[in-house]
Image (cartoon, rainbow, N blue to C red; front, side, top):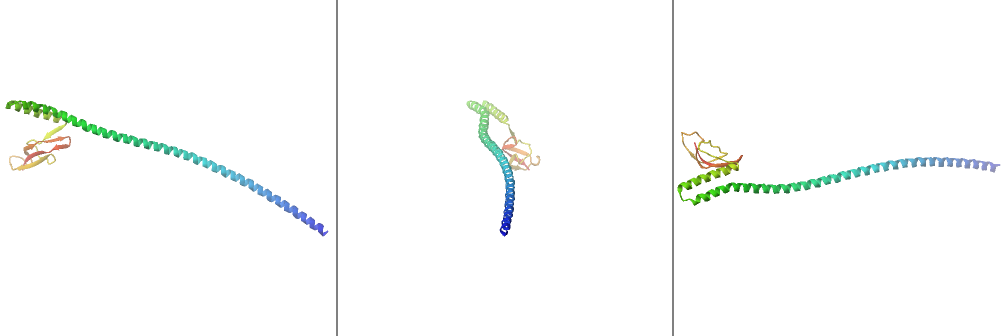
Length: 198
């Protein structure tokens, strides 16, 4: 009987162990299913984030390519502008130089005509014509003369080379002019060389 009891106890223990094992297997399977679902969910989230990151990277790469293209175009335009400006500057200088020389050519023509005459009166008349054509040429170029007798001395425009004491004249009045001064706009081309009263 004891054997029977022991066998019954062993059967009960085996059954209990089997039941416990079955329960453990079921719990393990459920946990595995839950874990698989969680893993699948995490994988889907990671795949979604990866595709978003790839899309953002593609967008940034496109923006970078566009910016680089704009930069290269701007540099090319600047280089072309710099070259064009240099050519224009050279051209403007050459044109201005040619225009100035064209204005002087009539003066040379009048000097050649005056050189042909031996009569003092005709030579004097020729010199007057030359002075008039020179003044006209300067006027066309926008050059004005200054430094006349009776003007007030201005150290920004006049160069006083002598001073005279004369009580009949006001102080700082130009008494004599050795060389006229010339200016174009605000730029002084030559200062007037004058004598000033003290």
